[in-house]
Amino acid sequence: MDQLANQTTPTSLPDDGILARVPSQFVGQAQGSLPEAELVPHDEIRIEVDAGWLGRVRLTFRKYRYTRPKGMRSAAAWSCRHAEPVVQVVEGCPTEPVGRAD
Image (cartoon, rainbow, N blue to C red; front, side, top):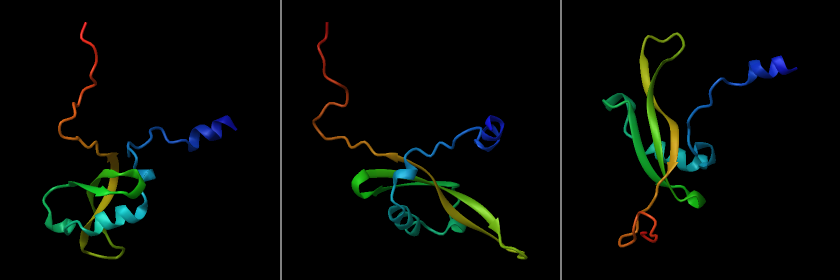
């Protein structure tokens, strides 16, 4: 049984940050606002969205190319690969913890 568990467990987990916790409606809205993947020279785009109860989130989309079955034409599309919370800096507040200087 232990041998079977080792075969089905991935060797490395993907570093997707908090992507699994971001509601799909916000990922879909962000993906819909991106430009056509074929027209953009960059392979990666980052976009910040308000993700409801999670707050502000930075989503990273990567371009991938695919070919339809029996097709001669290749196409490109965006795929969300990573999400991270956006730390908001409040003006006038120190970014470092304030403590006693000994």
